[in-house]
Figure 1 (spheres, rainbow, N blue to C red):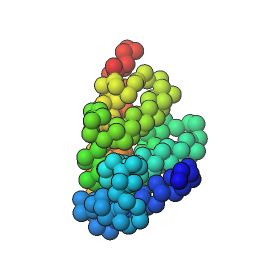
Figure 2 (cartoon, rainbow, N blue to C red; figure 1 turned 90 degrees about the vertical axis):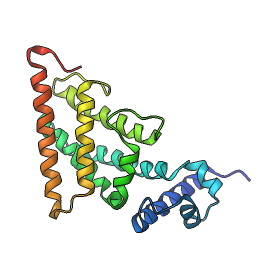
Figure 3 (tube, rainbow, N blue to C red; figure 1 turned 30 degrees about the vertical axis):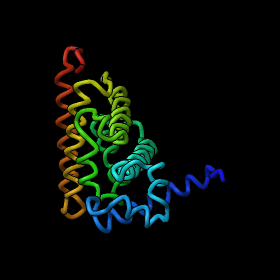
Figure 4 (cartoon, helix red, strand yellow; figure 1 turned 180 degrees about the vertical axis):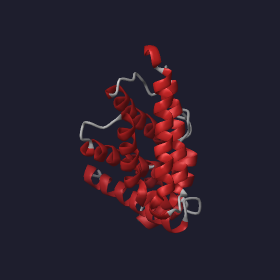
Length: 205
């Protein structure tokens, strides 16, 4: 019997839902794909048709959360923000959407993201990198800076961004003040760097 597209989407959603529950309850490393298949009520082979690994499942959740964060960022823009304010708003919006995944996010991001492209490691991780940097590129262009996702400036930005994510996943401070301070510092450092490098009209390449 041919499975309808709606049934496929429901199955996919159920797998992700059960994976998130197990990752949060047991930990990412302690959860197996077999555990997830049993909880979702699907055969392991069926599940692998949707997600080839638990890293793929987790990064799919991350990508969907980041996309919602970027949508939120665009709705919250008022039009008069500085470059620093836009970047802070973008990162803050993404972190809000990532918050439900925070209990298991550390090992997922450590394995799936890198300062440099790693397409052979996790395709979803590379997608997260490209889509976030594309948004950053548009922000920079609005403020007079030329950049592409492969520019040195974007590589430096991505390293700072990963540092923010790593700190945020383990931030036990009340209302995560430590992470907010780090975001502010990292953004100011990045903007000062690219502003200094572009004096005289030579943009960072």
